[in-house]
Image (cartoon, rainbow, N blue to C red; front, side):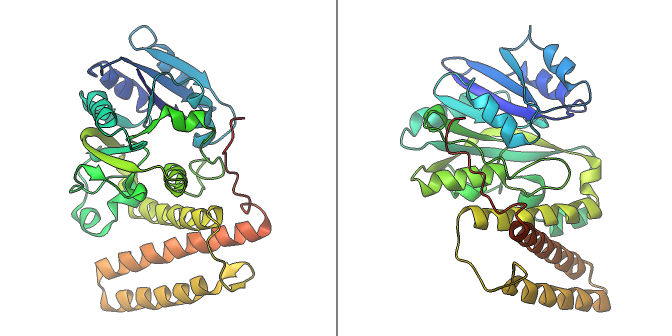
Length: 318
């Protein structure tokens, strides 16, 4: 038995098609169940999920505390079997997804974390500039296309397609509720922080290239302004993880590491050069790097002000 878990908040746009795709899943050895946690939706997400109860091995839950990680923590106590497969409410699995994940977990008993392949399902054809300039991993959580089966960097285990042995959660290791999706302004990296924390405790990760899903990329997410806002959240998450992991402190000015301020000034200079030379790629890359730094500085300031200094690490079963 394995358990598939995902959280949803106002997912009515994608839930009907996503859950319909689950009807075509091949059952893995031992069977499977699905746990969907509604995270205080204000649309008809709960009704959509409920409409699939007679067609899927489905358990629906509710978690009113805002935040994807709070919802995932609620779901883990309802997991059955030896493997928890995590995904999202805008992810379409291939028919043999669970069979492949089950096969990888059975074949690699020394590994506790498994990352699968995440490819895009574009709502509209993507523009060429985006495919050439944008870092598709941080922006759309797409995995590198050339990753082979084998041990993998925990930073490349992405939330839309990952599995964790149930024993990890039974030991009291849960998701950090201070990081990850919570409204429109947040520090990215919820699953990344969790897997990095597991790695620091000796848990290892394996790439299962046969387990594949498609991540739905909406038309508005291909807009340059949306992508650059994503850079700020990515920067916030990068700094938050450094705080959580207790990495060495740097000389700071009003709580902001001075090296970040120096780097910010350097990126402003690069942006100005790009604008003067009318080089579109140089301008975008400088804007991206500048916004990542803005996110890091913002998170450093929040930490100093006490809004994000606590790790909030969920290492014990509540």
